[in-house]
Length: 308
Ligand code: 13P
Ligand code: ZN
Image (tube, rainbow, N blue to C red; front, side, top):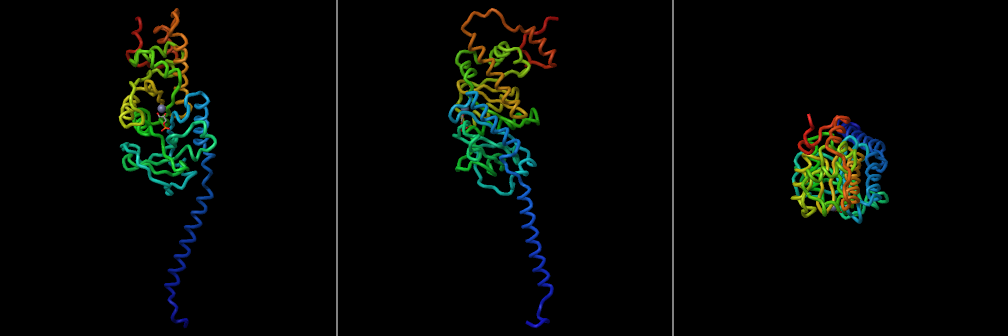
């Protein structure tokens, strides 16, 4: 080819194109190198520890229980390529306020006892879109599995709690034995149920001054129980599912675990004493003193009015 036939502008374009592609590849490689192993993420470590602890407490037999933890986008981006969607999974319900939110969620049918040994199989990280109708899988459910069958109750509860407290990050469900037992023998009226729990340990009213809400037995895994749970979550962070278990919500895994732990302890005391003659209790006056001491407002109308 003669020198005069060489089109300089074409060469320049080609060079620019190559340089652009090399730049992109280098950028991708740098981003990949910067991305850390998700199993070292603080949110992952805390999730694994919590699931293990719940199993050790006997709250999650077989595949019982499920957890969802909302993860901030910047946090997820430290560990994952947020453009790399592994699968799209339909949710079967609407949750319009959660679009773009990320959740680390236990898998359906998965055993809490196994989470620590195979997190990528038993957990998944999803991003919500299409007004809640679709979950984009970004990591996990490595055996082809999917999120808990209780996702409706989880996501609808997240939406409800975020309205009350923008700091809410966790919804947790499990089957603690004493709370479950209590729903067989105790009145399911929320005020009566709450007052009994408050009376069983001094610190109960301090930990959950808003009390616990109670749902009657309902079919689990449905959108209906999801809607009912979320409605109850508007006024309390604890919702008992009669003859099934409990839901807790909180700003982190520790707080939520602690809420359930405290309610379960109170139920345990109740089941120890319910059949015995009651000689002493924590009076309403004592509970008002606790409210003063910890600057709390108890659920309205749940304590008898203070004497003037
Ligand atoms: P999943 O295995 O679908 O999470 O269900 C467990 C459970 O506790 C249902 O209420
Ligand atoms: Zn359950």
